[in-house]
Every structure is written in C-alpha cells, then in structure tokens.
Amino acid sequence: MLTALPPELLYLVLGFLSFDDIIPLATACEQLKLLVDNYVRVHYSFHAAVYKQLMQFEQLNMHNESQTTMKTAAKLLRLICNIVEDVPKFEHRTVFTENLDILQNLVVNQVLHVSDSADKYADLCLKMRIIYLHTPEIRILHDPKYRRRSTKHPLAPFLPRDFTWIWRSHCEESKLFWAPQTLVPEFLLSKMHNSKLLQEREKRLRFARFFGRLFDVSSIYLEAHQNGTMDECIREALVAGDVESLYVFLTAARRDIDPDDMVMMVMQAGEQLWATLELAAELEEQFNPELVERRRSTGHGRIEHAPDWLLPTRYAVEDDSILRLK
Image 1: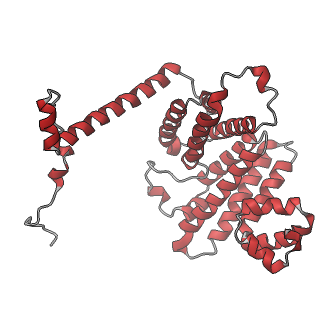
Image 2: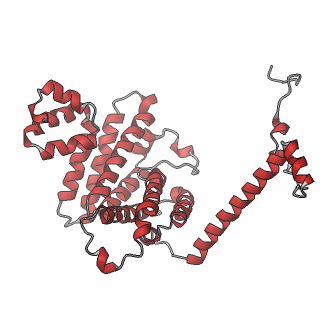
Image 3: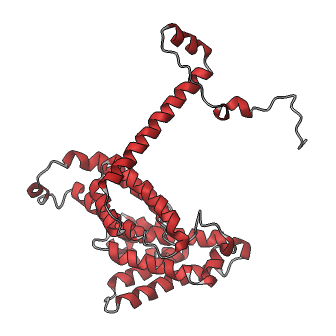
C-alpha cells in the first residue's frame, strides 16, 4: 500500500512515525528504501548517524575488542560535540542533553531487541562514560560549571538513573505476565521458544544484565549516587517478586547477594508504610473533631498527637501578619 503512494503522501505518512518505526520500512521493502533514506537524512540526521555507527559496531569483528569499542565510543561522542559546537553557548547544555538522550534511547532499543547484545553495548556505554569524565573539552559543553557541580546529581552518559523507569516497567511486567508461569516445569519452558512470554523474559534478563553493568564505579564522582539508585532498584524487584532479573542484575553489577539484607529492606519499607498510615490517621483525627468525639465515645480514641512541625496550621500566614518583604 505504501509503495503505491506518491513521494509527497509517503513523506506525510512518515511524519506521523518515530525513527524506530521508520527504519524497519527501509529494510522490509526495497522499493521504499531510497525514499525513506532521503526522509531520514533530512528529518533525523543525528538519529541516522548514530544508528549507522551502532550497526557498524555490531558487525565489526571484535579482534581487538577494547580498542574497537573505544573508537566507536569516541565517534558517538564526537557526533554530539559537532552539533553542540555549532549552536550559541547558552544553548550548549540543552542541545547536548537532547542529543545524549537520543543516543541513549537508540542504544537501549538495540539492547532490548538484539540477542546477546547486553555485554557488548554495556562495554560501549562504559567507554563513553570514561571518555566523557576524562575529557574536559566534552564535559564543559554539557555543563560549563561541572568543576563546581555537586556530586548529588552528577552528569555523565548512561547513568543508571536514566534507565530506572525501564527497570520498574519490567518488574511490573514480570509481576503481571511471568508470575503465573513460575510453577511451569523446565521441560515445558523449553518448548515455549516462540511464545511471547519467553521472548519477554529474555528481553527482561538481557536488559537486567546491561543495566547491572552500568553500575560499574568508574569514578568517585558517581559512587554515592549509584549506591542509592541500586538500593531503589533492589527494592523494586523484591516488591514485584522478579528475583530472576534481580539475580542477573546483581551478578552483572558484581555485588554480593545477601538475602538477609534484602529481607530487611522489605521489612523496613513495610514499617515505614505502617508508620505513615498511623500518622495519617492521627492527622485525620487532629482536624476532624466529629471523628474524634465519635471514636472517644466508642472507646477507640487516640491520645497521642502529631508533632507541631507536621501540622499545616503552623505554617499558615494570617491576613494581618506583618511581612518584611512587603
């Protein structure tokens, strides 16, 4: 159907598609390849340049793997720098961030859809991070004040915090789709190679390995931030019950697997939840006199009250208050 459209209408249709949806058209239909390539070259020039480098990286014979990966990482960062250097200085950080997000999304998309790609792309991402952190000329394009920047929110390519949303979605998917099948014997699972269930499982485990590799501590600048993000991801997997992905994740990150510590994490989260619920009930009583009287009459009243610093009335500004700023 698309092959019968004139170029003008085809370009109009392509305008409603994302880059990830357009690329398969060029490979699926030889008649559309020239038109699609022209459209991508005009509207997705950076996407196309990154995608080309990634395809070449996948096809390379990794005879000297470390040097080959380092060269590809340097080329990808150079693509971003070439674009940023051509814009006004006050736009450097915005443009760098936008193009870095595109690069990260394209890499993760390849990890999710290409088999046995987790380690290869993880090495590439870590090389890019090392080049970035040890090249002031690149870092200053991303953040002119990076020398004074707090380590609370560090900036670098492929930080784990940028992919926690994928980890959360995968944990949720495992809870919805894989949990009912956990009692299926292994010999039956071997017959499910073409099923969507097994494909989703392989994709989650592949991302878990890639994601775990990103927690490599290549700089003290990143260490404290990564530890906090890892604890958050561990809790998410424990609550969802996705222990298979969690095991792959921790193994790839080279972290010790301590079940007792993980159980304590969940128990502490439960205690915090109960404390929050109790505090909510106390606040409800504090501001609902009718509820207080009703509970006292039935013998279920509470004596304790929330501390003053938690009460909204403490921070209310009266109309007759004298403000210095006026």
